[in-house]
Every structure is written in structure tokens, then in C-alpha cells.
Amino acid sequence: MPTALSPVIAASARWLLAAFPPATGPLNQALAEAQAGHAATIAAALRYPTALDAELLDLLGPGGSGRLDFVTGADAPPLTDATHAWRTQVDETVVSWAACLLADADLAALAAACLAATHHGSDSVGDARRLTIPSPRDHRAAPLLRHPDFLGPIADLHRETLLDLLGAAPAVTAPEPG
Image (tube, rainbow, N blue to C red; front, side, top):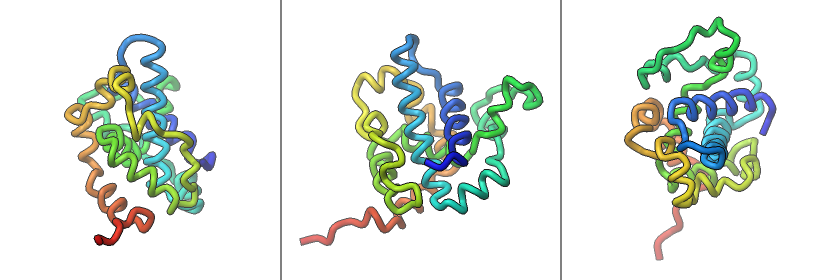
């Protein structure tokens, strides 16, 4: 994954974990971090599929978490405070797409398959099994992060764009019948 996407991936995953915290305990935290990280990585790679897209992101910036905080009803901390500066690196579309992937393992598997059509390639996320084939333990570790109803308002922000993108991706054409 290009380093230009790393701050966006980290901040977007961090925002998801702050908005939809995992169950108590260090193992649950680690499992939830892995799931959020995979979702944000796939979403960022699809959102910025070429090296030029990643460079433009680096130049222009991702936009921040303001609207996401508003949608979830969270009190947005002042971005002038250094402890909240990471929020400026949150990408609303990446978070929305990641929420879609977290809520739907089949959609996550389709999205992971579409990475081959990007500059990043299908190996850019490694083994995303916790996202694409979540175990009951993964669901228990991150019950809010995997719950479609809780993720709905965030996922709905850009769900149609993601579905259009994945439906048009040449890497995931349906086999011919018969």
C-alpha cells in the first residue's frame, strides 16, 4: 500500500473504533483493530485506485471527520487540539465504504477481489479473512463495529457509489450460465 494512503487508513480505522468501540479486553481490541484496519485498507485502495489518486490525496487532503461526527451525533472535538489532529486525516468516503464492508462479509469479499483491478493489487491487504469470513469470535469482539443497524447511517452516506463501483468492476464478472 502506498505510504500516501497510510495516514488515511490509520485515521479512518481509528475513527471507526472510536465510534463503534469493541468489547472490553485486549484481545477484543486487537481483533476489532484488525477488522477495522482491513476494511479501511480495502476501502482506501478502492477509493484511490491509482498512484495518481493517492498522490492527489496527499496533496489535497482527505477532508476530516466533521460530517461523520455530526451523523453519529458525536461532539466533534476542536481540531486545533493536537490530540485530535488525527481527525483531519479521516476520509468520509473511506469510512463509509469500510462500514459497508464491515456490515456485509459478502460485499467485503467482492471488494477484496476487486483490488486486483487497482494499482495496489490484490496482495495489498494481505489475509483479510477477519473481514471477509468473520468468525463468531470476530463478531463478539466487535459487536457494534459489525452491526448493520449501528453502521447504517455511516454506510448509507456513500453506499450507492461503492455498489456502483463494485458492480462495474471487470475483475468480478459473473460466469456465463450453462
